[in-house]
Length: 601
Image 1 (cartoon, one colour):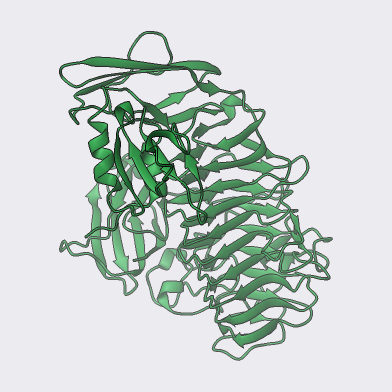
Image 2 (cartoon, one colour; image 1 turned 45 degrees about the horizontal axis):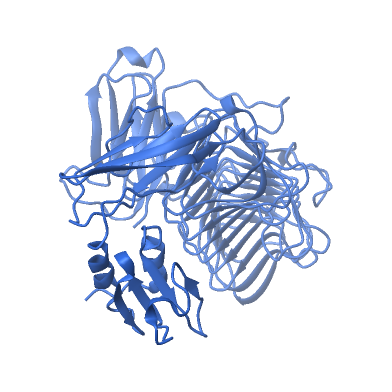
């Protein structure tokens, strides 16, 4: 038998309904009075813990137990007239404001046959859905009308000035809709949040200013995705408290954004939230909190931190980089340099309370701390194919400890493939800590670096995505694409731009992009076909790490540029594949492009 609903849940669901009253008085909980006073309809002065009062103040339920409340509510509704009741997720905000309307209407018969909505007060009904979604793109104040019928009777309700679309210069409270630069800069002046069930989509090139130590909390879905487009900017004229993802299992994504002037953590993730953090810049943030200044992950494993620049972030307490607390994210191909402070416990990482993050193909260098580069407390991080350069203690491990392989690490460390050499960066920052510019330095490996082709030689770690690798044209021949150590190894970070005067030229060839990655249950494969290959058939397939074909997507067929396909994890036999690493391979007349993907279950 399903559990009885909580009183708070019933209150939230039914309190807007005309003439439905809940009465509660208790010394060990909140007190709710709606409609009736302490003596009211009960004459004898007795106030029950719960009461449901219907039309004409008839009491349908009064008892100290909640198990009978739901049937009483349903019975009380039959005592009312047909009533149109409007509700929504938000009532005010900047354009394009996305409003999820909801009909909380009641009928004595229990049936409503039709709904008609006028969203802007112009007298024209715009939707006949029961719970429609509508965008408001023009500033103003809008009346909203709902007309309903139960087959015999028709009634309507108009709420005057129900929706207010602001100019975006002073935002706080619930957020929903689509933000883009066409509406100017968005300025948040007080705490704001995306409610559960709501979504905020931020378009490429959008600038968001957050002041007054305000924070954006995400309980619904946030998509700030500017992949391959103009960067999204999160900035403050003074200070702000970052973005908090709390108990959201939506497909949240932060891609190609810049975070600066944050005073706690740029991104905080808690309560098993799902977030992808890809190709962002976390620079010049400063915190004295017991958190990671750039990214702080608590109790969440479905977090993917990939291809980010984390540089020149100050923390005078814990770490200027990434903190994991009871969390095991995947952390790959990140540049983590010149963070921390002279008083920080750890310059780059804090890993504690049973965390087991996978830290692969990262470059971690010139960070500063009082104790160590990486703090570990009762945790077991796995570090591979990385470069970790640090003056002073590398680890402060209290319980647990790291597993490190195929890594260039200062002072050396026991483990297969580890080396202790100068990685020979092209032009690193000139000193340790945030006072030296790390994000405008050049962290490429020179051709004499011993870190080149020194990573894990297993096939799944080949540098297969980087067309600049000398062995790229020979793939999939064994042993030709051995992984480099550091941020540019593995999936390759070859699109990194260190400054406006130092652009990396990306080879122009037919390519593919896969998103989301890791994924569950589906991922999108987008093709970019150059003009030379567009006049020839192409082949697209999914392979396992042994090179065996798993799924044929396109078999020697003509496709258009920017064609997209979806893979749902099903193989050619119609069976669901197991979790693990797979390769997406695009073969054209002139080239072969591949992308490593991870299926999580």
